[in-house]
Image 1 (cartoon, rainbow, N blue to C red):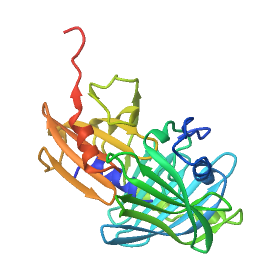
Image 2 (image 1 turned 60 degrees about the vertical axis):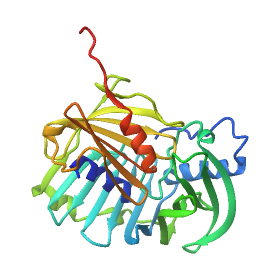
Image 3 (image 1 turned 90 degrees about the vertical axis):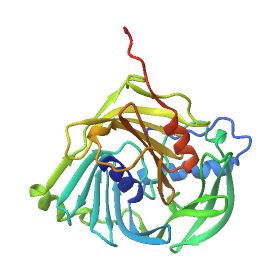
Image 4 (image 1 turned 120 degrees about the horizontal axis):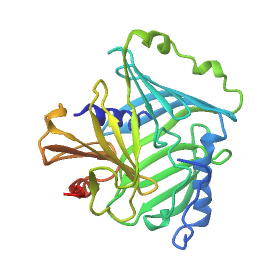
Length: 333
């Protein structure tokens, strides 16, 4: 697996913009349910919290500790994975540093999408009602807190359903389950949680920034391009998806950059990476498919390039997107 895909999976599994806007036409969705989604999107910018959450997928369970503090200027967060190899993520606004003490490596990158549980929804997206029915369900108690359950039911087979347990007092997501035709694909849930201004800033402190001075440091830089400026494009997007950004990004430890196209349906994110086969260390042949939890990967080759499509959508969807990638003809012959 390429290093860029490994990093994408790390950010996704460890567990954007000013005002949150849902579909104007919500005739098929509950207006009350849409109100609760607004609260979920806004809550991480309004509340301090600390706690322990559990991630479950493919029969595996992983526990993480999180501290989150926000004020008028900054949003800061520390997530420490407590199982297996030590992994610590420290975020200051959109700058993310991932520390791997066992390999003495730190990776720095800007966060383009808000996908760190419980910060699971963007603050601005449109037409959610075109892709999902948003419904209000029952109330349940999670980690000692009363919650309202909201269900995002997909309108087609191109995306998963999402069930969100929303803290009634603050709007914070207490539990999230991604489901595929009633089968639970993956789940995040707080086992213990404290919400309030009394979360101490000292809890954000970590020994790793000082230690990492002599580690392998990788700064994953990005150049944002204009629409359709990339040599590679996608012919036809699946219904409900749109391209939100086109970039060139460097791989960890390498000067060569890959093309990166990011798209979303407002809930699910998909990334397409294109790089020369000679620059890739991946042993995977064209047609390779893989998954972990809700994240699926599809690899194909075209014109001596490897196209890797990664997303929290069904395999059918990543394959549709990956197979639609093509190389633009250069203008002027």
